[in-house]
Image 1 (tube, rainbow, N blue to C red):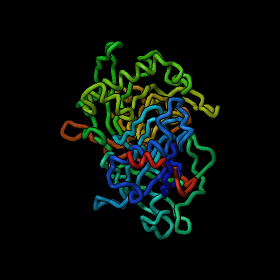
Image 2: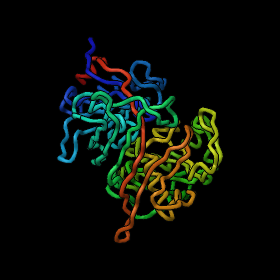
Image 3: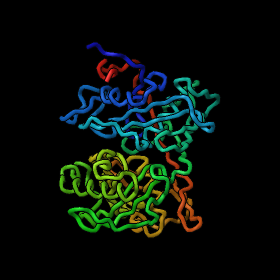
Image 4: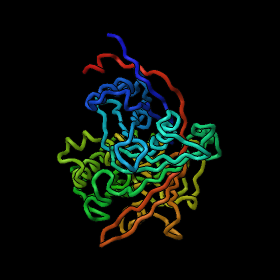
Length: 386
């Protein structure tokens, strides 16, 4: 059977890459998107390499973004994120990707979906996955998103023009509440593990945080070491599934397993001297805490941006697992410096307590983004008709 071509752009956003579509080029029936995205990215692939598609065998490279006209009066564009499974035949629309969010504004301007004049663009993005507004600010160069700059993003070679992302009211992005269980820390009864202390927080994306030492880890292990420890990965998945049920994300363990992108699970520890993937040294005094995050069963080479934002918010909540290991901040306005395998991720996070309940006011980060290729991506016609 022949192939069908779809207009697409391939972009890097932060430390992720994705195929970007305009909504108008896809079927109106969103149920038909899943087989198309699987075909484009090259999933399912039992070999885990996605050689027959645009994916790269890592969760950070197995992504699709769809941008279209806004359905909210306070937004310039709608943005839907799709996390494509590598080995399985599933596409998860339940959460957002913070890194790829940084590519949405530049895409919208370069595609003419949003008009930008002067030296800076401000694009209000409605993420349909979380129903939250993200404000992107970035420089304009001759009417298009600027690329060159001196901003260094850990995990990405070279420098680039910064994209500022303000995630407004990020709490409850997946569950409706910053603290889905109403508590900053819980004792989870996990099959085969017993009692595990965890903090379940929902800011930008739902996450569950566990002290690295509680699972016999230092928290500064490199991703390949964690990935090779299948016993550990199995324990973390069991904790994640239990947390998903407790947070109300899923009703059954099977449903939780079918939503592998949320909640994300992370091992946290205090600021410690460590090496990066590039062989550089992170001094203990340069960070406020350390994280190793898992997504879809894979340890991230660089912490997912929504995970970093959720962790920054969690570190501001007294009594949480993250707060206990975080260096005391000089002020409420000080950013949180998160050490991760690719270096430091710096996040601005604000929280407040209202009527006995914690609220997340904002989360601010800086990324870079770049259009890598544009044209036609091909998918088997059979995928379009399934």
